[in-house]
Image 1 (cartoon, rainbow, N blue to C red):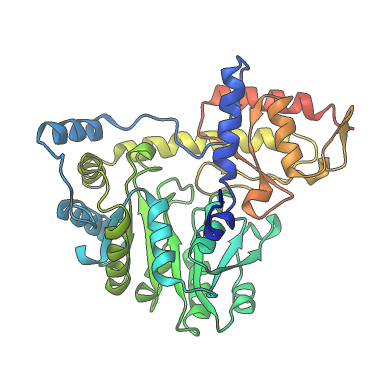
Image 2: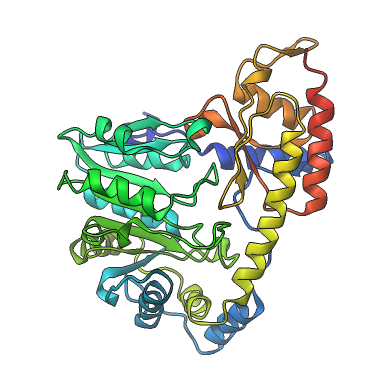
Length: 397
C-alpha cells in the first residue's frame, strides 16, 4: 500500500543537498565543520535590491502575477539579453520561474517524450539526469576528463547523436568544473548541431557573470542557433539571491508558450516580491556583480594554489563559477587504520567525518574519480579547510 510512484522511485536524491544536510547535522552536534559543499554565494543580497523588495511589500505586490512573470521583469530580462549578450528577444519569449532549476525542468518536461534521448556531458550538475528521467527521457552521458578541460568535443557530440536525440544540455560556466566554453568552441559544436534539425540546446548560463576570461559566450549567439536554443539564467549566483527563487528561460516562442502552459498548471507565477527585486537586479547598478566576481576570482587563485600543494591531486584551472573539481583517485585503495577509501564517496565522507570539511563526491556529477569543492566562502575558511585536508590525507597509506 505504501508505494511511491515509479516516476519517483527512478529518481536519486540530490547529493549536494544530502552532503549539506549531513554537515549541518554534525554542526548541530557541536563539531566545527567547514562547508565547501554548497553552491551558494556567501555574500548578502545587495542593499539596493533589498530596498526594491521592501518597497514592493509596501506597494502591495502581494497578489498573483502573470504566470510567466510581470511584464516589467520580462522587459528587464529582454533588455539585459540585448545589452550584455547581443541577443534579441521579445517579452513573449521569456518565462520566469521559481529559480533556474525550475526553468531547466520546465524545458525538459515541455520538450522530451518517453524514450527521447538527452545528451549530457559529464561532469554534469547533479539534477540534469534526474530531470530527464522525470520527463521519461533517457540520459546519454558523454564523459569528458581533466585532460580536455572537462569540455565536450564536436567529435564526441557527433558520435553521441542518434535519431532519438532531442536535447543537448550545455552548462557554461560549468557546475561542477568551472570550465568555460569559448565562442569558437561553441561555434564548432553548433556546426554539428545544425546538421541535426530535431535537437534543441538547453544552455544553462546561471554562472554567466562569475567568469574569469573577460566575456561570456552563449551558443544562442552562433549563426542559426537562436531558434534552436533555450537560454536558462537567473539572479541566484550573480546577485547572491539564491533564496529569492527567480530564474528564467529565453526561448523560441513555441517553447516559451509550452513552458507557460506547464507552469500555469503546477506553480503559476513566481513570488511577486522576488520578481520586483529581480527587476531591480537586472535593470539597476551592476557594480555589485563585478565586486563579487573579483572576490571569487581571488579565492579561485587561492584554492588552486592550495590544491596543487596536496600530494596526488590533479587540478585544472577553472575559468568561471566558484568550484574546483580535483581528481582524487590517487587515494583510492589507501587506508587510515581500518578505514579504506574505495571511491570518491568514501573520500568525501573521510574528509567530512575525520577532517571536518564538507565536499561532494564526484560520482554524483558523473565523474567518480573526482570531487567538488565550492570556494564560495571566506579566504580564512579556504586556508583552514586545506590545512585540515592536508593533515588527514597524510594519514592515508
